[in-house]
Length: 328
Image (cartoon, rainbow, N blue to C red):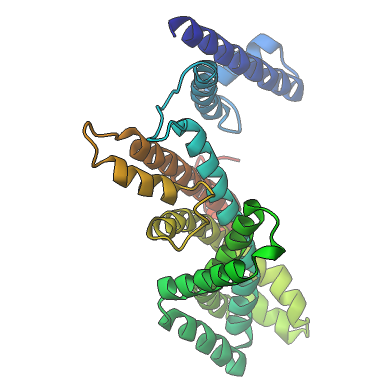
């Protein structure tokens, strides 16, 4: 075990050193300086981009991934569950399910939220009344009951038309798709409300009033002036909703109305861990693995939201450029 750990550590350090060297070479070519000077600037953090922080994070990821890969060839790094399945493998499959649900649901949410939210705030009048009525009605319906009813309806359809599905994988994929659809239908209202309020405020600013006075078409005003100024809200809300969707999937799968039981997910891992926690001695590592992977995934999504906000919010860029000594 020690030998495999050392081999994995050496492989991770070698991969990280190669990536750092490639980055230093690119900086040296762009700045037209010697490679040694570029490495020194990289080590001191004297770069326009936070390359040193990236390299530190990359070092941690490379070492952990390489050591884990080296040990996983012969050992169960995170142990096994009650039937002997590798917990690390189950955790990675659960991450894949969470990413699929978060991505597909986000793609469903965005068109509804962006189009209806901006239209309600910009056009106001009866358009605003209709959009408000729709998302107020959706918000008044308990989301858990709606999701459970939709999933159970799909499950009844699958059971009564079993001949249309050749394998259990097709049945699980259909249930996953409808789960994403119903999550998207019930999740767009919050973002639409935020975009409506921001658009109502932007509609009254001087440059949009001037564009309307000059007869600029509504579509051009929305795409050129309003949409760029609400993009940061969209991105932050999407990433935060991604985090909430990962947690919602775990809860729904735990109570039995989430993904198909044959599809591995965080909810199914937690449900299985609940039964194992009652054993003597206590089998705790399945629950700890699910908790750890969910924590890392959600934390990474939230940090990405903060970074995207700082990069794309025009007000943050203007404030940084105007501040004394700010980055240029």
